[in-house]
Image (tube, rainbow, N blue to C red; front, side):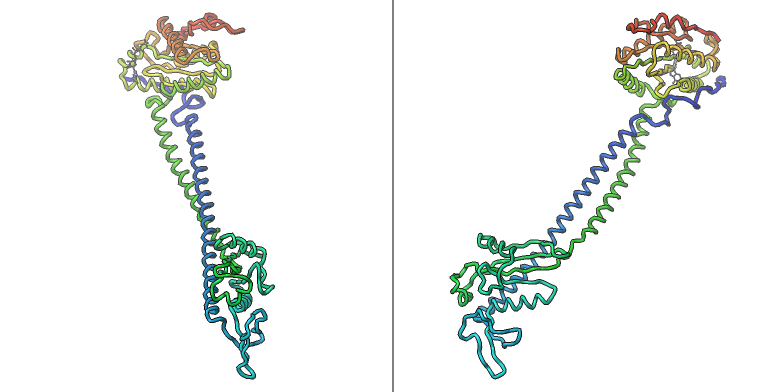
Length: 453
Ligand SMILES: Nc1nc2c(ncn2[C@@H]2O[C@H](COP(=O)(O)OP(=O)(O)OP(=O)(O)O)[C@@H](O)[C@H]2O)c(=O)[nH]1
């Protein structure tokens, strides 16, 4: 019949060690940092995509404007060619259409009746009239111009003059977005190349077939603005959805990772850290101790005559006993950095950072006596209750590696077993002498044990 084991009065409430459901050191922080990096990368990709799309929309708008302006220009050239091929066309003289003073042609005006006189309109005059007509509308404007105009008012604007000079250097056409009074517009210009019919009027100026005589500029005063807000809005939506997805997936991953890590580093029976976690923690704390010049103590605790307990009460009762000892160890730890783990079988370990050998030996003694007080019956032990033998070792500010420290504590434990069990023994290795630090023997002498229940 297994004994009724009282719960440890030190267990659960107030313990300082790491329990299975407490947050694991480091893991959440490192995953959170990775998540922040992934989210930053995602936002960078979305921002780059937004920049690229805005740029593409701008280019598309320019391309459309160029095509529209080019079509206007070509239509004008066709109309002018039609006029030139007819050697000019006759139209009635009206208030708006007065005979062209720059046209040197003896047949410029023809009197048909008393009321009707016809005047010849050459391509240049026709273009100017069309241009004046266009100015009355808000749409595309055009302007026939030259660096050497027959009619002074056809003189080029500064940007047109630049374009005309570029045409003389071989540029085929010119197009540019410009900022108007309150909106963006587009201006385009292409050269007027002298064709045979043009020579009738322009041969006097010294032009020959194929010469660039001037150009026609087309101005689109209002460009439709690209739908930037739709692009910005959709990218903000994509950025938010992606971030949300990364956060949700990240949370699931953190949970899965945490679950796996817990399975890997916690002991399934006692729910305290296992040997693997202990080694990680010991190495970590020893490194810290070395950096900060702080001592670190290690306790190895082994249940006495545990085989006899198992043989008497069965393996299941042995398991419950191990759980109670784990609880008691947890409860005996007082400081935040203190750490206990199951080292294997019926062996437990305790790491006490910033603790000298004397302090660690006192804590070992508290643990030993607390277990005796708990009074878990053990009929086949000479002590009649479950007891612990404890070996204590201390690393003074990074003088040893973790394996040497474990070996020292293990040797001390061996001596505790040899000297009758239910004892705390400290490491036998002579300590490096430090001012004010008692020797190992002195500490051993201070401990008044063993204590029989
Ligand atoms: N119930 C239970 N028993 C375990 C577990 N792990 C190890 N043991 C037992 O612990 C006992 C350890 O026996 P020994 O190594 O001979 O040590 P001991 O009987 O405690 O003797 P001393 O340490 O010399 O005092 C063995 O019977 C193992 O089966 C466990 O998880 N559960």
